[in-house]
Image 1 (tube, rainbow over the protein chains, first blue to last red):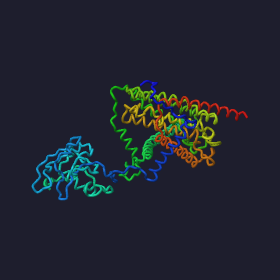
Image 2 (image 1 turned 120 degrees about the horizontal axis):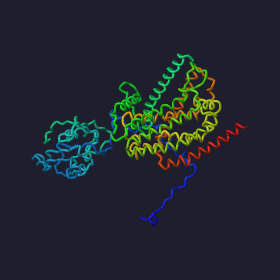
Image 3 (image 1 turned 180 degrees about the vertical axis):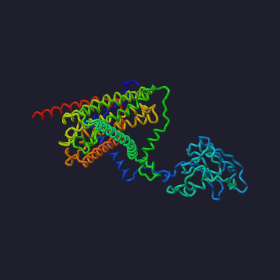
Image 4 (image 1 turned 120 degrees about the vertical axis):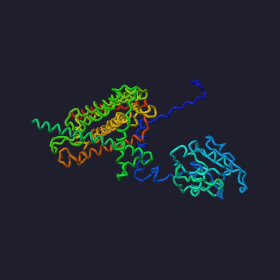
Length: 203
Length: 353
């Protein structure tokens, strides 16, 4: 574009008065603003941070943390192994092995024999949650996920179901069971203290 | 004076130097804690509050110890491409230049008749006090230039160049703005200036413009925000100390804070009356009580000044390089010249009448 192009819009900076050119009034205003913040934290406890290990931050209800596999009223895993979440996943961190459902489960043809999420690969985008047609996979508000090895961070079906057990009271299933209650907090979760006892696959 | 009196004098002086230097280093360590706290408060955070809580010590008062231990115990990396002698000597110059200016800074009353003849100044009754401080203070620029040059790194070198231009520019208004006060008090000796303010009024009343110019220039001289261009992190990584680690970096930090203390002392001595409390203190009060009282008044004023300097740091954004130079050459220097000429004329009129 040429310098004298008619479509160029030229802006002239506003002319400052002498007082404004000294910067001093603006500096005074700025000092007043910081003074308010300093006094607010120092004297009336207005800090927006929390003292982490003692105080726990409660994330908003739509926070996307560790996944869980929901169970239905009979305690069975809701997943029907349709692979939609694995297809939607941009990070390819979901690995599902489906199997034909037992004769006693008339409501579905398949169930997931194995359901593994690599929590280290996951980018916590929530697309699996959106893709799921039966609301089986959900992202919880657990944000303090830690582990000592990469293997610990690969969550299998039993572990994901135990996350549901750990969080179902604080965060009820989003669909069909009323709104999420944001005031309750969930207990701290690490890869170690999630119950890893092998769950009965047909449970 | 006999031989033993001389020995006693020298030993006493050495003890005094040790105490002053020790207090200064300790003060710097705690100033860093205060700075971090103020930074946190200004940003709606809480800041350091853990170190020492295991031993029941509140407000993270052990944090300076932790910081110091970290500085000392870290690996001291000397990159292979640096100019080694200059690289090592630069932080030493920084801390040396910042420390020796305290030789003439009075931190209480100085004069005859004090108890035990204890002078609150390391080198009492030096006629050229303020000239000495400026001379030594401008040595600090060598540390920054040498650090920038010796690091053999583009960012560090740019930081050093900027710093030299900035310090040379701001030395002029800094010196010129003080001359007005010197003319009024009629002496370069800092104690005489304090005594004049004690007898008459504080320097800020007779030299408001000089005070403003001096404060602005001293911000620039100490490389504090809004004039911290030599180390502007966003553009220059770390500026002149990019290549420094461990205690060598710590020495630059220490030097910077010592400079902050020095300019705060200078502002207090030249413009805020030193140890003077209006209607309370007088030069003739030299008893033990008054000596300690005046020393405490002085330290309290300096502490307030340091807090203001930190407060400004967390308020103002950094100047751009051209606006920085414009401010010095187009505004501060002409204003300080006008201030100087006007003061000289008025002083001459009053003296001759």
